[in-house]
Amino acid sequence: MLFLGQTTGLRRTLMAATVALMGNACVSRQPWNKVSLRIVDQPVVLRRTAEGSGFNVSAFLVNHSSKPIVRGGACAPDLQRELGGSWQTVWSPICIGSGGLQWLGPGDSVLIKTSVFGYSIRREPRLDQRMTTGRYRIRIGVGLPPNSHDSRPKLRVYPSIPFTVRDSSGD
Image (cartoon, rainbow, N blue to C red):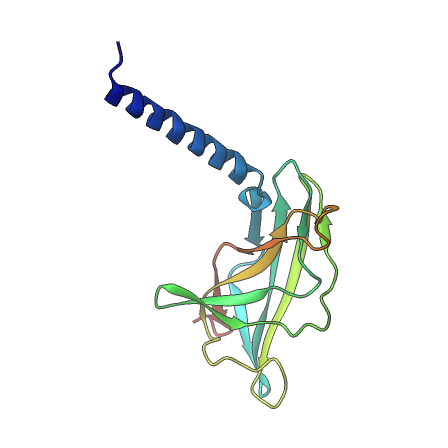
């Protein structure tokens, strides 16, 4: 025999379980839960010139989901450095136009090569003085392909696994 308080508790439990299941179902549809962005060569070496500083970094973007995904735009990813326990953007590419979308089918991967360089002279992108040796990550936009209702995909910024940038002297 159930009392009124027990019925309410049972209903709350069933409602909480339903919400949790619905939440998990919604999350599993998102492609970035099954995407990896792995840096290829580590450590990455910082090069300094009279014009500025920079480095080259390559990463594999892998679609582990059962659905196609898109990588947003032909523009290079932006770069963040870990400073004081938080991630700060220290470099963003200069992009003209929105670029196209790069499609990746289920199980597909693509190598993303990025040349990061900040100029200390009167050129863009300007050198952020925080762009020195340290821990970094690149970030790209990933989402589901556009459908008949949306002309543009909704992209989520997805970070790579952190990597180390060292000076060319080995410091």
